[in-house]
Structures are given as C-alpha cells and as structure tokens.
Image (cartoon, rainbow, N blue to C red):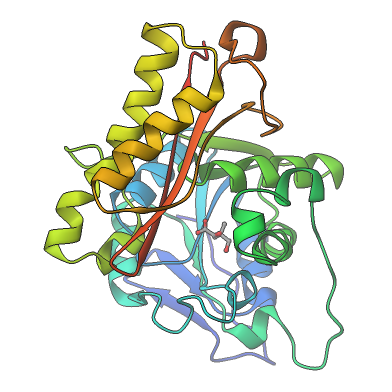
Length: 305
Ligand code: PAF
C-alpha cells in the first residue's frame, strides 16, 4: 500500500479514508496530492456514479493498463440541458464506493459542484464542433461542451496516463479522443466494449428508469442494431437509407420514438453515400430512441477488423 500524505492544514476534513486502503477525495487539491503520492502509472475511469457492471468492466480494463486505477464520481450539471434529468439522476455514493473498493480502485475523486465549478469564476468553453454538432450534440445543445469542460478539468486534476470510456457513448468517446489530441494531453484514450444484459440491452445507469414493461421492449435497440449488422455485413447492403429504415422499423414496432437511427463513418461520424466498411474501417450504427419517458442510446461497430 502507498504511504498517504496527511490532510492539508487548510482542508483538514476533506480527505476521507474509506475501509482502510482506497481513498476518497472531495477537492481538487486533495485529489492532486493523493495522486502525486502514487508511484507508477494511473488509468482513470471518469463516471457520474450509479455504478454497474459496465463501470466495473471499465475499471478492470483500466487495471490492465496501469499500476493504479483512479475513478471520479460526479454528476456533472453542465452536460445536462434545462429539461433533462440532472435532479433525478441516480446518486448512490456509498454503494458506488463499495463497488470501487471491490474492484481494487486506489482512489475515488467525488467532488462537490462548487469544487469543480468555483462560484464567480468566468466559464471557459472547450468544444470539438466537428464531432459534437450532430446527433447527441444536435439534440442536446451544450451537452458535449459540458462533457469536454468537465473531462478537461478531471484530466488536469487526476493527470492519468490512460483514461477508459465506454464505447456505448460512442460519440462522446470520439469527442474526448479529439479533444485530448488537439489539447496535446499526454493521455491514452481507450474505448472499452459495451456491456450488455443477456437480451442485448446495453447496461446504463438510465435503465433504472425503465418500468418492467418498457424494459421488456427495450430489447428493440439491440435488435435494430443487429438488423443493421445483418444487412451490411451478411447481405452486403450499401444504401444507408435502407439500413436506417430497417432500424427505425424495429424500434417503432416496439413503441419507441426514434430521435435518430443512422449509419455513419466510424471516425468522423460523417454521413456516407455508400456503405463500404472495407474502405472506411467499418461503419457505426447509432441509435437514440425514447419510450415511456426514458431516452436510451446504443451503437454497433459493423465490419471493423
Ligand atoms: O460518460 C459519463 O459518465 C460522463 O459523460 C463523463 C465522461 C463522466 C463526464 O461527466
């Protein structure tokens, strides 16, 4: 175990040791001090909490990349729109800390909103318009600005060598990759495979909002993605409109309202006139759809090596 530095004189209460071993920091100052006390490399898993098996698999992946795993738990207000679910987003810090400890995490940064966004500080804008304007960005104005801003802050505080993001948030993963490259941050951004329930539903903290009846129908997202995969990879369909119509049909037949069901370039997320996975390094099918007041997203990379 690493020797832990003493709490600072100005923040004597803010550093908490949890169950002897894993630490929890609430301020950037404490997190930086604790991170510096770790010898060796760090892989970082940023989260908004309500942790599930998908997060645990990110932590396992992170553990394979570095000497220590650090996790952040912060429901970031700046990435939620005014009519979105910030207030009701599930918050379960004690359970989340237990999961992190079980996963062998070295430390958790769980700041308050004021610690991340000091009051009366003029706001800074971090954004990647080329990748963030469409899809989630078009439907959730300001969302990726909020994500980039908080992830840039977290990277600056945690200073990891690598950071793991779920491929389930495919556009977010690409936006963060681009932001990290353009800001010359020496951090390897690793996209980790989506964890799925036995029926194919991607694990997500927002699945908790689904009623049992809607949960049954939510298999539609995976079925729609599978229909896209079948058309492109097995039948050689090259017309994106045909594939997109097929996905939409599956979703609507399960009483989902479709925000988008599209097939795009896997790196740039640009529209494609013709689907030729061998030329573009695969194609990505992306879905966002709503049912019974719950919005779900999912995606599938098709035809990539
Ligand atoms: O994917 C998430 O949970 C969030 O968008 C992230 C990356 C932790 C930023 O708040």
